[in-house]
Amino acid sequence: MVNLKSTPTIDTTSSPVPAPVAHDWEFVEIWLDPLQNPPYVLLLRGDNRGNCEILDPAQNYALIFASCAYEDAQNWLLEDEYEPVEGRLNL
Image 1 (cartoon, rainbow, N blue to C red):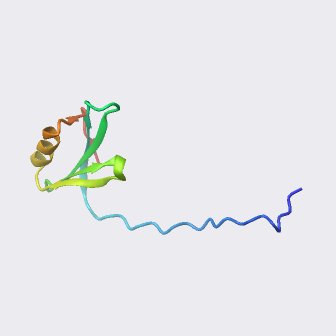
Image 2 (image 1 turned 90 degrees about the vertical axis):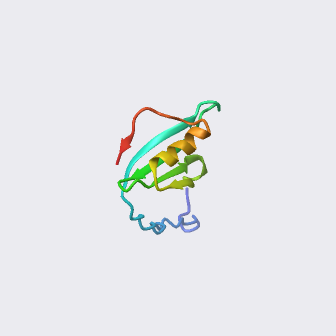
Image 3 (image 1 turned 60 degrees about the horizontal axis):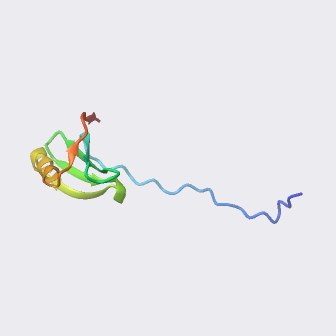
């Protein structure tokens, strides 16, 4: 028989949710380094103004590169021998 008076309580209060970042991201691409096993994955996201960011999902989506042009972000990935996964997720 469980004595409910001595059972510890657990605080289930929700943590405050951070406000969403106001940015109009238009697409996300997945890029990977096939020379690693398993392949290392990075995300490239872009907006309708041409701004791009490269994020590292393994590092809590840390920003590792930012550019005002898709071509700059693409070249940064290609220089490090990353390859795009076919297709693009439009947001």
